[in-house]
Length: 218
Image (cartoon, rainbow, N blue to C red; front, side, top):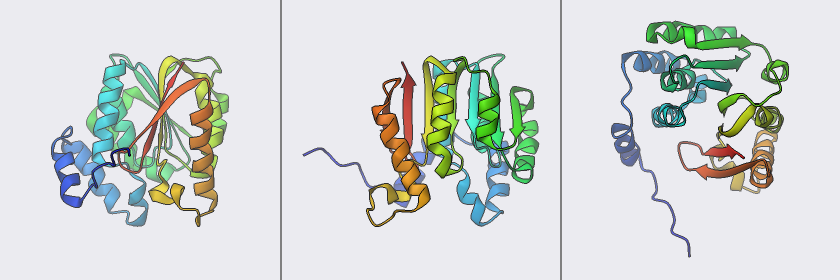
């Protein structure tokens, strides 16, 4: 019988945060402003996931990154801070309102020059990008029903050896709940199954936050 993971209690989660990369004043201000939005604040990635994104970006020596779904900009800030010298991050989002918060905090962090924000439906933005594989890292964290379509647009644009990250692949546990057949969870299941059988990548799942699919382009 395979060992089961340790249950992440509130205390253990706080311990994890304390032993992950520390959030600085700019990140804390961004988290606080996002929290003040109320319900939508749940769209923001957790600080430990942000620390993971920064470290992974550094480890890969990323110079070109792509993000689908930016919200108030915390994940983009974390990726931008991990970029190699001269690196650039292209962000796709549909909301001028939420990304206006992002722009302010990016400026305060001194990373605005490293981030290009494209406003509009992300699927259209992706299809407008050059088709050749040029990105070192891509992070997908947007509307769940479109995940499979995002995947098909992103994979060809990531270079061999590059990495694709897909957020919320547990869908708050609903992926293993047979009684949940909503549009979002069905798309996540399709996304997960597609990645598992896609011979263009090798993939695994990480139990960080709400689940991250980590795929390496062959």
